[in-house]
Length: 255
Ligand code: NDP
Image (cartoon, rainbow, N blue to C red):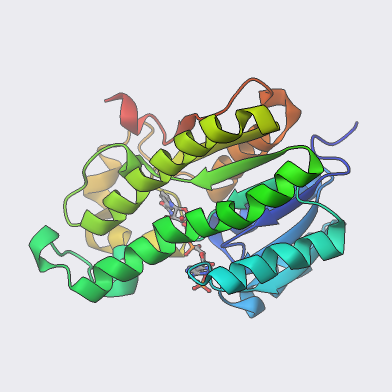
């Protein structure tokens, strides 16, 4: 049976682990050639090794999504390797504990922690789109999926700048969807709930049981469960979908 992404090329940021890695493996299963990008090129290479072992085709790229020149170089490398970028999954992100803001309320965040969070999670997504879109216009279209979060839809105590960054990602997504509809570029977001990755280990250790009581499914999601939504949004199966934000959260947002 033909894969949903046969003959397509894809870029995945934050592909060195978690949701990005799982999505790379799903894209490979569906026939895409994948550029796996991550702040750590070593982590990206480990994902590429997994993709290759599964019979897929991938390249690894290092690069910091907060740096415009590095993002531009990353996009150029994908085009040089594959000729085009059909699908872009802008997924790199960080959590509060990674900027020393674990458990801190709004007034307790440091200026540096706030700036770093917005820099990676919001500006990083914008920079990726900024450099992907001209290529997609030139090649006649493309699909972009940005990683939002349930934190992009509601407030979450002690996650101030994270929540702000993810609300921002949804705003960028909707705006770009309007701006580039006529260029055949679809732009959507996936909003994961609590997913089993390195990012949630700290939170789960501190208050996992309490949080799972708030999830109708009573469990965390698996990275692959996000990847399947990203696949659908990047495939022609979702041909009439743009500017949308899909929750994949075990029912959390329905409460
Ligand atoms: P991971 O920490 O496993 O993955 C995030 C990846 O992003 C890491 O590989 C990390 O690289 C990379 N990264 C971080 N900063 C940068 C940067 N400046 N430039 C390039 N790459 C960077 O976590 P997840 O897979 O869980 O997170 C993926 C996305 O999903 C994030 O945007 C996150 O906010 C979002 N999300 C996750 C949820 C969850 O419950 N896990 C819930 C909702 C949203 P490295 O580790 O090498 O620094």
